[in-house]
Image (cartoon, rainbow, N blue to C red; front, side, top):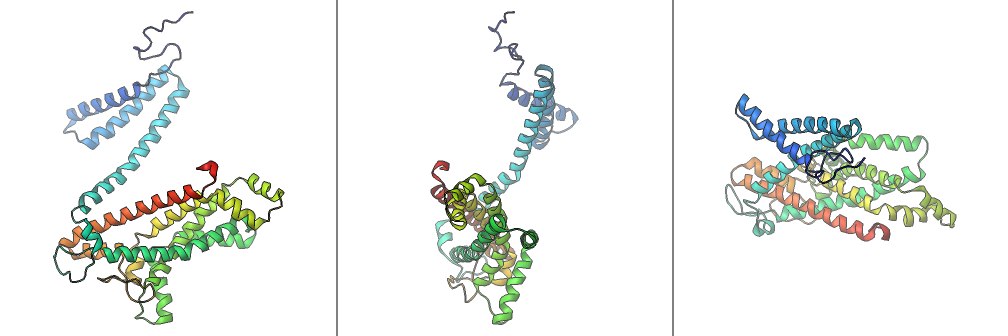
Length: 353
């Protein structure tokens, strides 16, 4: 039986396949928003959030019912699942986008090159001068020291759990890693404070104290992320290396780690992003100063989270400096992530680039 396709593009249903046309999604979305606006207008004063929420519900119901009638139950369920997943993704974007807009809007008031290159020496009260150069340097030094401590420990522990770990010891390590993952940051700060004050005395303050506290928070994240990346490496690659007579340790270095390097770098960056904004451990261990201090083993050091906290607590122009410090911290995290992507792309196997 011949099918007239001359007017198929202009009709809602494609008679040749029983499918809704591509533009039907936008039609249902627009219709849902219009219907939601009219319904809320009748019930009371409509709001943007109310129109969007009700319009999303009407869109999901309308598109699913139309798909069920035209395309059948299977495609209707698939369309509903797609709608729910997309809606959850857009819902998760709301706090992220609002946070970025808020930080950028408030942070740009005091954000400038002068703000990035000056410290707080001689700045008192509501003076508009002052910057975060000392806090940026302190944050980078302490975070780098924490990475130097935690990344080797986390990497070697993950290698042991995946490649060698069997029996009660491996299960005990896994349990302890799970426990460490949930440790509050204030507990890590108290540990670093107690460890160094017991050895060097109660008056001792240094950047290394904060680095140890942050390393305590970083290590379980590194272990878990690296462990998952190593488990994703196909066993066939290991077996092929063993078949060529390559020892196990060299197989791990040359094959396993090289294959998983992109995921490992990503996991390390997630761990860095996890700790670079911590305030409580650094407030307890390194405190805050107004000038640059590059010695990790002597004297207090300024960090961006503590600087933002203190400035916001001060009030006045300090609130603008706090938002600018928060914007600076976000930009540093973004730059570190871009650097990690470049590193992982450079060291990744040729076929994965």
